[in-house]
Image (cartoon, rainbow, N blue to C red; front, side, top):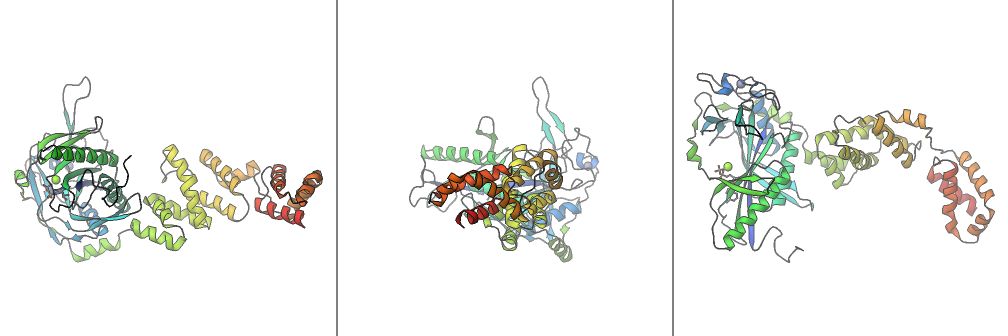
Length: 491
Ligand code: ADP
Ligand code: MG
Ligand code: ZN
């Protein structure tokens, strides 16, 4: 078993400390591409979303999409970075079959955003901060569809050419694959809350390149890094980093040294293999894009974007704690996504009891949604329906147990609580006289047990409760049954 070893840092392996710096590409959720009016959409038939601009035909000129800039600005502000009043697009030149222009329009030495931080939390609850270096705008390339069984050729789909991206480049502040995983979760959460990106890694809307090196514990200077690409899930990033850290440590311990290189992660085989020795930025022959003017962001525009920024996840979780009196942990869970947080707040307005709403949403609702792979934003049990059900527990109309039966039925039929209650005749008996009448009958039928109770064998109390619940088909209000029974037997 690998346990916590005294004073040693948890991230240190065999005396070596990993150092990780992540570069994340996020596809912006704009309707159209960054430099032309083609629709930006995933899953369309190949090469149907193209025009002379995104095909790079001679003479075609790019026009910058304002919405893409606004999305980049939102993310810069959401992470506490500095929007640059003037930034510059640059050509990054390289050959690739899915890059018809022979260059990608990106930003180089004058990006639109500098600095900022991502504050994230590990599973243990420990809080971490990773500083950002820059956030810049760029266009995506097309896609090569490599041959599947029986096919002879690689085909090229240029629909993705010119899709707007931001690249979020972080300082090498991360010290373990687990931290990298938690950082990515938080980054995705902020991207989703700000509406900048869906965060869908399977669709390639979010891509992460992981730079990693190791250094002897206590050494300040970073070791030589490699860059691992091609992971298609956050867990994949964690696995790839684990693999590469182990490889680097073993290499150094056996007397070798790490060569700076780009590696491709193979998820199926669980290995990262050398793709190319690392290119340097001068290999790309960057120069200012002559077809675009500088990007100038006015103070007014910056302020407008700042004003329209939605409430961010950390602020929302804090508000949940103070406004609804729920625990911090629960607030974290309920703000994991904007849809879930919206759902919860709507339940609260109808339920009248924020704590009960928190429990129901986290256990019952998320239970079914996760098991069925449903989407909370479109799930048939709408928040007003769940809220109404919870309010019926508060008012004494339903017991918790009965409410669960009603909820189960709601998840099957999508009908409202009121209808189900009526149909099933599920009405909680909270009327003194009715319950007392049943208690009298039951006590009269078991004089010997009554005598036992009164002689001090109070454990027969449970027997009486059971009898009353049975006689009422579980519909008697359990608290009242307990109270009234006690009064009868003791009095
Ligand atoms: P490039 O532009 O060549 O990719 P950068 O210097 O901009 O290189 O760094 C890219 C990423 O690599 C950043 O996220 C940075 O934090 C990270 N990084 C740089 N040096 C190291 C290192 N020695 N170990 C781990 N990560 C590193
Ligand atoms: Mg890089
Ligand atoms: Zn186009």
